[in-house]
Image (cartoon, rainbow, N blue to C red; front, side, top):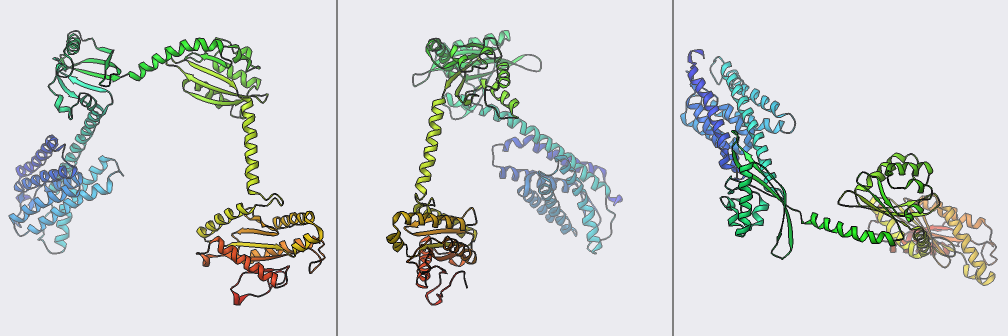
Amino acid sequence: MDSYWHWHSLIGNFAVVALFISSWVHGQFVFADRPRAFRNAAFGLAMGLGAVASMVLAVRTEAGQLFDLRSSLLALAGFFGGPVAGLVAGGIALAYRLAIGGPTAWVGGLGIVIASLVGWSVSRATRGRVPAIWSAGLLALSVSCIGPALNMLLRLAGLLPATQPSLAIALLNAAATALSAFFIMRYRVIERERDLLRAAFMQSPDFQYVKTPESTFVAVNNAVMKHHGFTSPLQMIGKTDRDLTRPERAEALMREERQLVATGEPVDDRLEVLTDPAGRDVWYSTSKVPLYGRDGETIGIAGVTRDVTVEKQLEREVVDSRNELRYVLAEITDGIAMFNADGILVYCNEQYKSLFPRTARFRTPGTHLRTILKHVLEEQEQIVASGHEAEWLEEIANSLSHYSEEEVELFDGRWLYLRTRPTAEGSALVVVSDVTKIKQAEAALRTMTDQLKLLATTDGLTGLTNRRAFDTALESELARCRRNGEPLGLLLADVDRFKTYNDIYGHQAGDEVLRRVGECLRGALRRPGDVAARYGGEEFVAILPGTGEDGAFFIADAFREALSGLGIAHKAADKGVVTASVGLATFTERDAGMNSTELVRRADEALYNAKDAGRDRVMGWRTRHEVRPVRGVRA
């Protein structure tokens, strides 16, 4: 290889890489407004032409091989431009290499494809995972290995004659790739910073503009453009205030700017009120500064104008409020306190002091709010969560700077309502009202509401859930069990021969029996989620979420035995005591289409089967031909 080595070709190749990289970096602004895919394709075109130029200056061996720096440009195309740039650059280089031919043209073409893929692969593998400089270093190392690795593999396969690999070409490819990557990355950082500054200028809500010393616009942002009715900032370039506003105002503005250029003294927050098209007054605050070149000469004027109408309105409102406050303070019955911007009490009325009896002597003008709050803690005047006194003090001390409303409870059970209203000057007005009666009324109302809710869902005789609440609970629990794939048991119980009991012992005794039945049913339930309800008359029902058929039988029989065990006399009953029959139905995964109505129907059918089978027993639902009587527990 050394006999074919030409250093001038090597240097020419390096210069080609530098030339095309530099040309792209300094000329890509032409494509700045184009879509990303178009810019990537243009970058690939530039790198592909550079690769062709590198092959033109390549060192050729006797075997027809070309030694050049094309891999550097092709890898850079895939690395920075993605698959679009890599495909364009690789296609151009591949077409040229195959066009010039030679016995190793196919080897060169394979190297071109590998170089393009290496650039894109390194980019995908490292982007966002390692620092950019490491990514560039890995790219340079990968490019330097393409030629030697490819030659070695082809020689081992017998597809190329034995040649001495060139370390110089590998090192030059690595150096060219590393330097080019660093140069492009550095330029992209500068480009991003420039784009950020431009975006901040163009998208600022304030009116920002730059003029020549002669008051001609050279740059304006979107706010200025829209305000003057243009559709593009470029339409305002070269115009002056004479083209935008009435003559007398334009002359005043330009005279101001001539003085600024002559004296170098900036314009700071000059206020101006103008009338908008709707006839409303709009306040503007304008600041302007001269711009100086490297040699100290004035090269332009930078200005910013803000709409301060809201601020002016607030100032006017504060003045009006101050006048009104003087009158209110003399007549109001609430406690009033005024703190300055440093948190020092500057005024308070007697009502304010009387609302805080334990610390009234400390609430005098000249006392800092933090001092007052420390006395509140020492005197235990206000209810504060134990262990959080320091946080409470900081929170209250900082509340003067913003609007806030809070209710506080005092040691004697009274409640105070505090409203903090900061002013434009930094002071804060605190209004304190005694809302103890309102809080007591709210508590009574909440208690009444809770009682009404309880009455609306509770059976008045037994204290169990009533029918309406049961229907809602069953729908909800059935839907939940269906979602979670859980079983659900339903018990429907009926007091045996209850009508006869009422006829013999009277309705008052019957009501007492129903209460005892409800207690037995509630006592038989095992889980917090189980629901016991009075279904109507002498019928009771229980919802057993997550309970299968065996568990439901166990609970039902426990209820039946508990009721029978009370021994409530019933001479018309089969066993001489009050008993109950229970029908049982369950929902399982096999019953996915079942609704609550069908589940209740099955439990009711099972209950009638229990009645028919002799009463005082539990029976589960079965299809008609499977029905079998059960005495006591499930047999």
